[in-house]
Structures are given as C-alpha cells and as structure tokens.
Length: 322
Image 1 (spheres, rainbow, N blue to C red):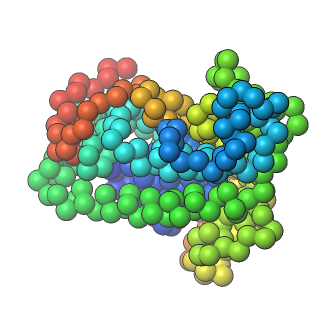
Image 2 (cartoon, rainbow, N blue to C red):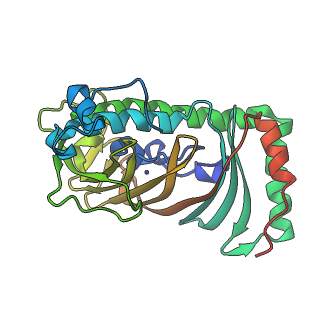
C-alpha cells in the first residue's frame, strides 16, 4: 500500500514506523499486508507454487481455487519484494498526497541512487513564485551538499529493510481463505483475480518487535491470477498492537488501510492509490491521528540516471499552469 519523497516534512514528527519511502508509501500497510503494497512484477524463477501451480498454468486444473490459498500469498509476497526494490526499472510519475500537512502534488523520478521529487502544486493550485523559489533551493541544496541526499537515502533504506523482513513473514503470519463467490474489483476487465481473506495465524510467533504488528491486522486481498501481483488489498486493525510493550508505540484498533496497484509497463507493478487512517500513541506520550490519501499517476518508463541528473531534469521541467 504510499510510498515517499525527498522532503524533510515527510519525516518529521512521525514515529519511525509511520514514515514514508522514496518509491511509494511504506507505512504499516506495506509492512503488514502487501503480499502492495503491499502493493504495489512477476517473479520468474521463484516458485513455491509446486505441482498445483504448474497444472494451473497449463490450464489442466479444474479451478484456480482448488489449490492451497497460501500458495497465492507466497508468490504475491515474493513479487511484492520485487515491487519494493524494482531492480533495473525506473519510472517518473506524479504523487498526489492529501494529509494533515495539506494537499500537494509532486513530480517524482526514480534514479539509480534513489528517488527525488519536486513540489509542483499545492492545495489544488500552481505554486507561487516564492514557493517555487524555496523548492528549487531545497533541490539545489541536495546538489551542493550530497549529505542532505544521503540522509534521505538512509531513511529509505531503513524502511526497505523492515519491509523486506515483514513481507517474507506474511505467508506464515496469516491464515488465508478463499472468499465465497470470488468478487472481482472490475478494474481489470478480462483478467481473473483471486480473492483471499486473511487473518492472523494463531500458531505464528513474531520473531521481532515489528513483526508483532502482524498480529493485529485482518482483511482481504485481490491477486491477479496471471502475474500473481496484488491488485488491491484492504486491511483493518481489529485489535490493539504494542511495540516494545507499548513504550515505543501503540496502535489502536479501528484503523483502516487500502492499497491499489497497477502494471505500469515492462513487468513493473506500482501503487496507484494508498489510504490510511490510524490512531497511534508514540512513546507513551503523544497520540497521533494519522490520515492520508495518496495517489500515483502519469507513469513514464525512463532510463537509469544519477540523482543529480534527475534533479536537473526536474528543475528544467516547466511547472503546470493549472
């Protein structure tokens, strides 16, 4: 399920478990549920499908839902690791974020070194001259002071490491069942989606503090039957979850998370929509009501470039006038 940009405001005043990444939202949704995100890239060469999957591929099996539903989760989880790291694939796209900091649109480029983004609209209007000058200065500071960009990349790498660990745990952390009637999203006409409900596995023993978060989530996932990527995933926090016995953070029940993903071309899957509504108490002191709606669009496949070249490209692109 967001995200996610080289903007310091994205990282301040939020607990580490709620911070974003440069490539899309890496919040609790990515950690918990994306098997995208998580969210969002078919994995040729990886197969926990066994003989059943080979039969499905050849069209011999009576039905895709005749196999163990966990096999879909295993493949989708592995594919989400590819979506998270997207080796050799680079995109340029727009991110539209609405949260407690306002309504912002950014132009984002994935470089070989990490992602960079430029604020291009605020509150539904073009930037003022003063706002544009400030944004240009922020990006130019990254060019003249590589340490500023290094901090951004470090935040991103830390989030990816956590996501890697939890995505690998998802097949065993949850119990998966087929949804009766297999209701389709309707977003991919002609494509079959496998619909699974998931809930915590009572036999799962979280190996880390962060992995304990998986014990408080349940929901539903739609997986593209052909590519085995997650098309949509919904999750709800049905019981409170403590981090560090509640001293680091506590997630209250009632939270909702949704992520939608799409194929952006060239085998690349990426999130198109991510929403979250959570209540978290940080360090036993401050309670945060986290509410965000993030959409990604205008995907363009680009070649590999340095982050410096990506910044120059952003700065040389005219701002939208409406």
